[in-house]
Amino acid sequence: MSLPHALITALVEQPSSGSDLASRFDRSIGYFWHATHQQIYRELARMEEAGWVESLPPESGRGRKKVYQVLPAGRAELQRWVAEDQDPQPQRNEFMVRLRAEAVVGPTGLADDIQRRLALHREKLALYQSIAARDFGREGASRKAQLQHLVLDAGIMQETLWIEFSEKALKILAHSDDPLLG
Amino acid sequence: MSLPHALITALVEQPSSGSDLASRFDRSIGYFWHATHQQIYRELARMEEAGWVESLPPESGRGRKKVYQVLPAGRAELQRWVAEDQDPQPQRNEFMVRLRAEAVVGPTGLADDIQRRLALHREKLALYQSIAARDFGREGASRKAQLQHLVLDAGIMQETLWIEFSEKALKILAHSDDPLLG
DNA sequence: ACAACCATGTAAGTAGTTACATGATTTA
DNA sequence: TAAATCATGTAACTACTTACATGGTTGT
Image 1 (cartoon, rainbow over the protein chains, first blue to last red):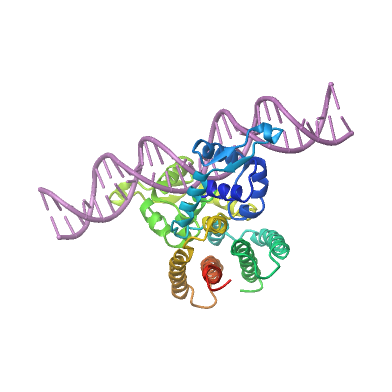
Image 2 (cartoon, rainbow over the protein chains, first blue to last red; image 1 turned 120 degrees about the vertical axis):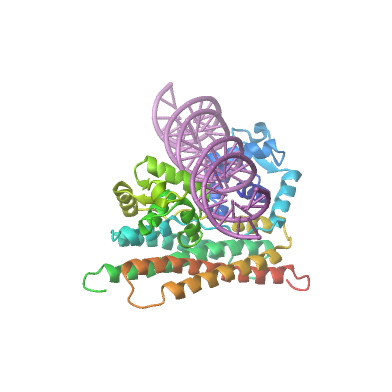
């Protein structure tokens, strides 16, 4: 289970409140592990209960924000989890289910939606590339920076894949749905 | 939500029992939408309740297998769902969370586990490629066959991506964890 | 002071996972 | 006929989603 460990990681990098985490999640880690604010608040409460994190008393935050920081037990748990072997998890991809369904009950007007999705993937790719250029442009980075760059790179590779895949799909649809062609 | 639609798709292709579906899911559609047998039985019961599928009376199956087939309402629902626009869903990838965690609490001995995962990805790629060669070798296939091939192709592209990514990760770890180098 | 927004949270429901149960069929 | 396996299921739990609530802060 990844959410608590993703949160501890974010908190080790920078003690934060729930809402801070929610907005940081929509960048960085959130590219590979999305979470809503409700999940985040609940998980923070659980982890505080478990003694993995503590919230600084609100008076030190001088407002209503509750800033959490990682306790030794939380860091130890993160280290334990990181050292565990994991198998690659089965991927879930709703669009593949839809493609297979379309193959048996189609044709519907799939191409338009693929075009729309293609534009979204191109946007996301451009975003990732601009982040890479901004944050990881230089040479001789630290081990930590290299690994963080690697994760971003996975995002770039994924988006590139879906762009390539969408184009392949459009080509097939253009040919097979055109009454003049095969 | 994809599971019921994945099941209807499989049942349109071939009326089946729950256990048949479970084993077919571990091939084909299951590459992109995994489900346990418990989920499948529950979902079949729900869909029968909803009038989307019906089970042939067990005497016609002459055993304990309950064979389900799709009713018009089920096919209509599948067509409705297929025609809907979907945004690309946020990807969840536990390994990326782990990499980012390792960046802040590492180094641990990540490389061994990546090697192990790499071997699994190579196996899966070989499997997909053999299926592609067996089922989709010929030219001039139907629209349906082309789309089914496309889905398999997505699997091949994904596995290829993770192989490439794993190799990239190993290269970084080999350099940054070697005390003689950077 | 009133409206808009921000940060935190509760509640209810759905999807997915893990562990176990039961009877029927095949195999040793 | 006993053991192993198969097909179908139940139960309990965890993760995630969606809708709503509350009180504090900021802007006008």
